[in-house]
Each structure stands twice: as structure tokens, then as C-alpha cells.
Length: 242
Image (cartoon, rainbow, N blue to C red; front, side):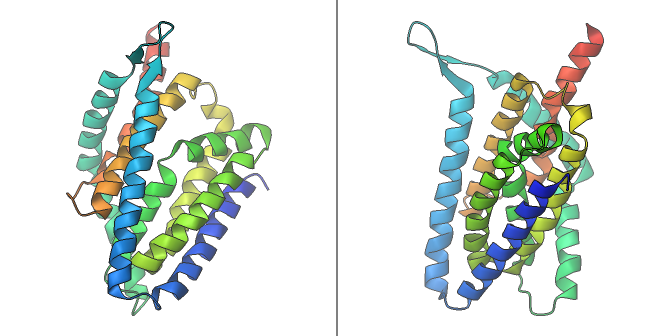
């Protein structure tokens, strides 16, 4: 099966979410609150560490150099404008509400769990690199490693946010499966620099997810998603110009 890695990833998200739902009923609101705070802090650290490691590098003289900061800002601003015009977040919420209406008793935070988990599972570099690797070489090691991480996250997320996390498996399968099937076409565009830039923007969005979880400020992270793909468009435009 060509998209075996993505299928496995989606299945373990579902299994992890089901386990988390079983745990949820045994957690009081006090414990759910502290777990959410711990989860939010963890996501912020993951996003922050990924962002800083992508921006800074050690020069030959031992000093720190930065790269792609201005490009990151441009991608975020332009991508946010595009995403706001399309209103991706609203469409994701409507899809979540549609499913919720079909599942009586699923809980009022269904949309939050669905959107948060979908973004976290899709914006990381492992989703892109692993899917591309499977499409080009048939290797699924990266996606299997991602599956373990996603399974753990889905248990914690669903234990605090509910069944909406389970349905994030659908966009994960569609997103990663599409990259795998289009790997041959995308390979010339996904150079190491482009992947690094996409990863940088993705890590900034992960940081935004962490801030949302902690309810520090509501950030429309879904509407910033187009920013992740702007490095590909930039590279393609540069090829066409030259």
C-alpha cells in the first residue's frame, strides 16, 4: 500500500484518542485543567525550540548567525492574509460542528479538540518529510516514529478535549496521503532549504497552538496555514524567473 505510513498514523491517532476518552471520564475538572496547562507549556517549548534551532546556527568563528527571519515574517504575514480571506478556521469549525451534530453528547469542546489536534499533527516537518520519503523510497520509518508521538499526544488531548481529537485522523490521512501520492511531482520543489523554511514557519504555528491551549490569547492558527506552503511557491517563482 503506497500510503501505508499515513494509514498507520491515522489509525494510531484513533486508538490513542479512544484510550484518552476512556481516561477522560475518570479525571476531575481540576486534573483536566492542570493537564491542559502542562500540555500547553509543552507545545510552546516544542514550537519555540524548533523555531530557534531553525533560525540560529553556529558560524565558523563560534558566533550565532540567524537566517530566514525576514522570510519567515513575510510568509506569516502573506499566508495569514490568504488564510483569513479563505477563512480556513471557520471552515474547519463548521466541519467539526457538522460531525458534532451527528454525534449527540460529543461535548461542546468538539471543535477545539478537532482543530487543535489537526493543526498540531499536520504542521510539523515530520508530516512533510515522512510522507515525501514514503512516496519516493517506500520507507515509512519517519511516519512510524511520528505515529508514536501522535498516539501519545492524542491520548492526552482526547483525555482533556474529548472525541474531536479522534476525527483529526481524517485530515492527517488526507494531508499526508496527498503528499505521498504527489511525491514525484513535489520532489524537485522540496529542497532542503525549502523544507527548512517550511519547518520554521510550522514551528511558529505550533507555538501559536500552545498559546491557544493556555488561553493566553486566541490566535487563528488555522488561518495562518498557507504560510507553511509559501516557501514552495517562492522557490517555484525563483526557478521560473531564472
